[in-house]
Structures are given as structure tokens and as C-alpha cells.
Length: 146
Length: 136
Image (tube, rainbow over all chains, first blue to last red; front, side, top):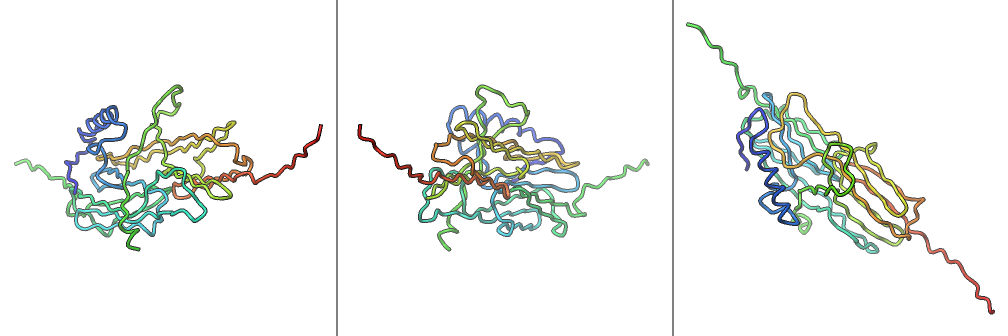
């Protein structure tokens, strides 16, 4: 579960997180666990006043194997990436790509309208559009002069 | 199958390349794509993860014995949206490999699908050249 104060501009921690990752990389040969994303797949979230767009990189995953569900203000992306086990006469020289099941949940700070959720998958990048419910959209409040 | 379901995917991080001698002309960060290399009797298959790269944005070049894979990504910028939370950066992909001379360079095939590049590198068939020995 993830809750961050979303602002209309870049979060002030974005640069700090990036600096922290670079420093971790200086000291470790691999990323330390504190700098790693909370799970697979790594996701980016874009916000506007009408809603959010979440993107994830899922190369090689069949769109039929991806399940997206939205409950209230929580988005869950799960699925499975086919492990390609070697055949009998094959041998691996290198194996860096991971495979198996994955699941990721995101809690946004607004209620999502489930009717308007759209997802598209292109070139291995999953893009999910999450509109706010009408009740949750920021309303302009008129200031009445007395 | 129960065994497959227990297998969890790890490693969501992308590894950025270290800039050594030549800088890149594009101002985008460049990442190292994760690669599986499988060898069977007739060919070597190289599978590279390059999400966001379409079939027209891939370059596979072969120079002497160096095979280089380049994938170019157009960063997405949805209209009216601001990036609020990022766990991965978007950038190009590049990786180089040294080929042995067991590979038939004329018949290399590349297929790009769903952000995954498959390179088929057929091995040179056993060319038996019988060399006759002269008594001398």
C-alpha cells in the first residue's frame, strides 16, 4: 500500500530519491534494497485534476495474462510472465530476465471511477487511465461577496 | 501448475549504463536491457527486454565481431498530466556482444514483439572440408 501526498508538480522527494539511488549505487555494485521499487513491475504515476495515468513496463507479457482491477481508490495489477524453460537440447549462457507471477497494488488519493478505466498495452508498456469519480473532482468554490 | 505460480518475479530495477568514452548524442538516459542467451544445436537465440521500443526503433548492427543492439524509446508525456511518482526512468537501450566465429553472419534474424527482441543467430553448419594429405 502506498500513500504519498500527491501535488500538482513533481513531489519534492523525487530528486532526493534519485540522489539516494545514485549514492547507493556508488557504494554497492547492485542497488540496495532501500532504493529498489516496492515490487515488480516498476510503475510510474502521472496525475492531473481529472485523474491519473499509471504506466508499467511489462515486456513480453501477453495482454491476456494481465489482470487489472480497481476497487475504490486502489489499483491492482497482477499477472504472469511466461517462464520459457529451455528445451532438452538447449542450454543457457545467460539468464537475466525474470519470469513468473507478479502483483502490485497502488492506493491513490482519490476514488476512481471504475467505468472509465482504460488500459492499453503497446510495445511492452502497459498504460492505465484512471479517471476520478465526478464526486471526487476538485470543485471550484465560489467566493461570495457579502 | 503450482510450481510456476510460486515463482515470483523479482528485479524490477533497470540498470543504467556507465558512460565511458563516447557520450551519447541523445540527451536521454541509456539502459542496459536484460538479456537471455540460449543455445541449442542449430542456433543461438538472444532475447532482450526492451519495453517501449517498437519494431521500427530497433537497430541491430554487426561490426567485425561486435554485435550491438540499440533500442530507441520516445518518452511518453500525456497532455495535461504531471509525473507524480516514478519508479523507473524511460530511456534508450543499448548493449553489445562479441560474437564467436561459429555464427553464420549472413543469416541473422531479428524479431521484435511486445517489447522483446529475439535475435536468431544460426551456427555455421559443420562444413567438413576434407583435406588430403600429400606424402612429401
